[in-house]
Each structure stands twice: as C-alpha cells, then as structure tokens.
Length: 226
Image (cartoon, rainbow, N blue to C red; front, side, top):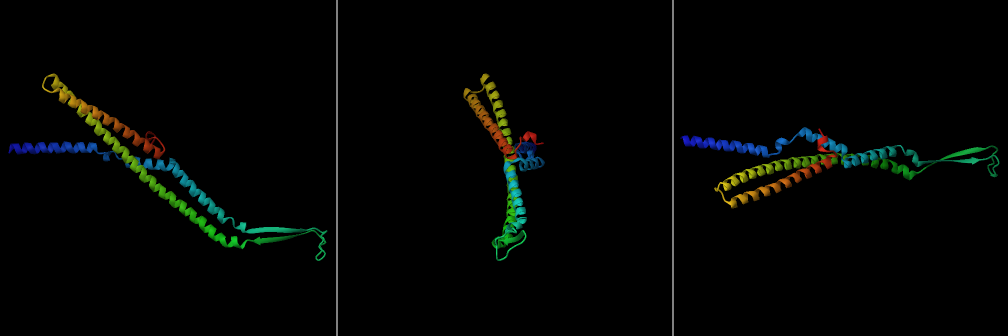
C-alpha cells in the first residue's frame, strides 16, 4: 500500500514538473496583443507600400473632383470682330462690332457622365485596394511577430540543452578523474556540448533574422515601439 502511494506521488511530481517545463517552452505566454496592435499600427504608418496605396487613393479622388468640374471643357467660346471699315458690301457695318459664338462638342457632352462615373469607380477601387492591403499587412505583421517569439522560445530550449550538456560534462569529468568513468563517455559528452553550442549559435541567428524581418515590415526598431 505504501509503495502504491509512493509511486502515485512520484508520478504526480513528474507530471507537475513536466507540465511546468512545457509551459516554459511555449511562446504563447509571451504573446502581447496590445504590443502586437502597436506593431500593426506602426507598420500602417511607416511601411512604404501603405503610403503608396494612400497616395493612389488620394490621386483617384483628385481625378474624380477634376472630372466633375470640367464640364466647361465641352464648350468652346469664340468671337468675331467687325471693324467699321469692313469691306463686306452685302452687310456693311458703320461701327465696330463683336459677334460671340459658342460651340458645343456633342461627343464629349455624351461621354462626360460616363467619364465621371469611371472616375468615381476608380476612387472606390483604390479605396478597396487600400483596405485589402491593410488586411494583408495586419496578417503579415502577426506572422512575423509570432515567428520572432517562436525563435526566442527555441533559443531558450537550446540554451537549456547547453546547460544540461555542461552539467553532464562536469559529472563525467569528475567520474573519469576518480576512475569511475571512461574516456569515451567523457569525449561523447564533450562532443554533445559542442553540438549544442553550435545549435545555440544557429538559434541566436534565427532570432536576429526574425527581428530584422519584423522591423523591416514595421518600419522601426522594436526597441523604439513601447
């Protein structure tokens, strides 16, 4: 009976510590949604493509306003000046006179409403493209942010592996010096330590690359975003 209780306690402790380790290894507790929103807002403010989309929308609005105010383009005014010394014998004039004329381009008059409609639709399309890119940039910032946190969690695991490998080397070295261990075991432990050290360097590089990718999209250094 005592053995069963002891076994249950041992299993419970193992499960407890294993759960703690899994919680530490996960990057999910590191996620800060307020900070993520700040990253998204900063990207929308500084990323060049966002500014391009906004400029295209503004240009479309300007073209639309111009199309509505250019009705006078279809009218061509003209005048004819008749001096009092006119050589016209049929309708002679005794005084200087002006004759005004207005010419209307019927083709342009008919096409004008369609041009205005197309300009208005161009504004709507530009706005939709801007909204679409805003959604795209939000998704991209989220992916890059989660990748950055994942590389940090992975690096923590690699650092922990190095600590375990260092502990193992120290123990085997002590046993070897006391004659209780073999040189082969000690050399294997050293090789494992060197391997874990190389993995750590790769993990550090992954963290820096993920940080650079996120900063490139956001437009500012992460340290400057509070």
